[in-house]
Amino acid sequence: MAATEATNAADEAYDVIVLGAGPTGENVADRAHAAGLSAVVVESELVGGECSYWACMPSKALLRPVTARSEARRVPGFQEAADRPLDAPAVLAHRDAVVSYWKDDGQVRWLDSAGIDLVRGPGRLAGPRRVVVDGGRVLTARHAVAVCTGSRAVLPPVPGLAEARPWTSRDATGAKTVPGRLVVVGGGVVGVEMATAWRALGSSVTLLVRGDGLLPRMEPFAGHLVAESLAEAGVFLRTGVEVREVRREAPGGPVTVLLDSGDEIVADELLIATGRAPRTEDIGLETVGLTPGSWLDVDETLRVTGVTGGWLYGVGDVNHRALLTHQGKYQARIAGAAISARARGVPILESDPWGAHSATADIRAVPQVVFSDPEAASVGLSAAEAERAGYRTRVVDQDLAAVSGAYLYGEGYRGRARMVVDLDREVLLGATFVGPGVAELLHSATIAVAAEVPVERLWHAVPSYPTISEVWLRLLEAYRG
Ligand SMILES: Cc1cc2nc3c(=O)[nH]c(=O)nc-3n(C[C@H](O)[C@H](O)[C@H](O)COP(=O)(O)OP(=O)(O)OC[C@H]3O[C@@H](n4cnc5c(N)ncnc54)[C@H](O)[C@@H]3O)c2cc1C
Ligand SMILES: NC(=O)c1ccc[n+]([C@@H]2O[C@H](COP(=O)([O-])OP(=O)(O)OC[C@H]3O[C@@H](n4cnc5c(N)ncnc54)[C@H](O)[C@@H]3O)[C@@H](O)[C@H]2O)c1
Image (cartoon, rainbow, N blue to C red):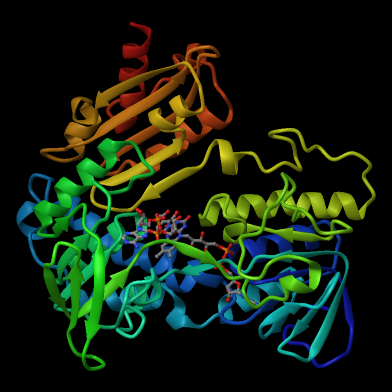
């Protein structure tokens, strides 16, 4: 049955039921179907999930004009033409087109063409291998149920915050107009990206950070370089501050943010970007012995631990291993392979690290690009993480501006690169690049880390001249002496 939005029928049986049609759920269903299993996805909002409509895609549509203008401003002969404010209505209209005007017809067509059924409505587990949709339709799974319900923004328990109806990432990526004054709380990825975008679109932005810098999960120089550039763009960055209370007297009126220091900041909108919570509070986890609202603990095949019969999988954001679209899709490929192998009765799965049925890269080699200006891109372990993990390491840094490719890329190029080498095996544990245009540099490092390419062989991977990738040569020269 490939028809979407099929008619009512009691106890419809499928090989695999997928709860949530975000990028992860779509890929679990696709892999299962490609392996010859029947699959249905249950979706309560839009097929495509958070990423397509309220996260990756709209945020990058808002950010690309920012970095394009910034880079053009550094190119001789182009500076004057590029030195103009962004056309905010045009950028927002482009964002609307990128998210298909928050309609999922295109993704539904894809599901249909892939032979995957869709049932719309909130799905809940109702005991082993059973899912009830919207309190009515009952689906049963012969082999597996994959929970791919993703995550949502959390609001910290600050007095007055919920009542003030702050922006979360959904509002920050979907807003139709540019707020005059925007306060952003949180110096992680969402806070940094959205401060970058809305400042460039014309808002006066104050970024409030509880710790001492931005992007705390990356090498410290990433946060430093991005903070320097945000300050140059006119963002007011305040570190070491805690929000004590929030007040909004009238809906749609100004919002007042009170800090621990006693300072007050008045703004038109307040964005809370302080992390994520799993969307598992109302999916019937209690009917299979799990705790509602918890992240799902999974083994290396993405199977939820502690569930009798081993039929329940937790894939993507919901398992909290790596909250990134590409990692959710990677896990989906692994889970799809494990589900189909088990369905075929394969006696022993390839579940050793890097095996066909073992999610490994989502722990050992996670690439991430922060699309700020400059971009910050990293994979694997930072120097501090490697040290904490007990590796004997050598850390090599290079000024990215020193390579010819960067010099040609733009005047006044600023950037930095670091590689962390495991001295015992002489392979890379991690790498970080910060600078204009480094996003596309990252995959080279991802291959080096995931494939554990020996440094001696990397020496033979010759970067083209004159590209920014020549920084690899400088890093390796510095390492080898
Ligand atoms: C502002 C922002 C920007 C981001 N940018 C990037 C980026 O540039 N690159 C990147 O890799 N990652 C980015 N991310 C992270 C990325 O969005 C997530 O990692 C990704 O969406 C996770 O995919 P998922 O399929 O696991 O979950 P989701 O995309 O959250 O999809 C889950 C789906 O399940 C559905 N669902 C939930 N409960 C039920 C239910 N009971 N019944 C039926 N359906 C249900 C939801 O409606 C949703 O469609 C960003 C996140 C944010 C917030
Ligand atoms: N380009 C990308 O890949 C991209 C872009 C956006 C989001 N994402 C993903 O989405 C996820 C969520 O992003 P995020 O920025 O919301 O989370 P995050 O975990 O990256 O950052 C949240 C920040 O808020 C701070 N914080 C927590 N509680 C606070 C409080 N009460 N007051 C002040 N600060 C507080 C934390 O210390 C942290 O620095 C991330 O895991 C990220 O990987 C990825």
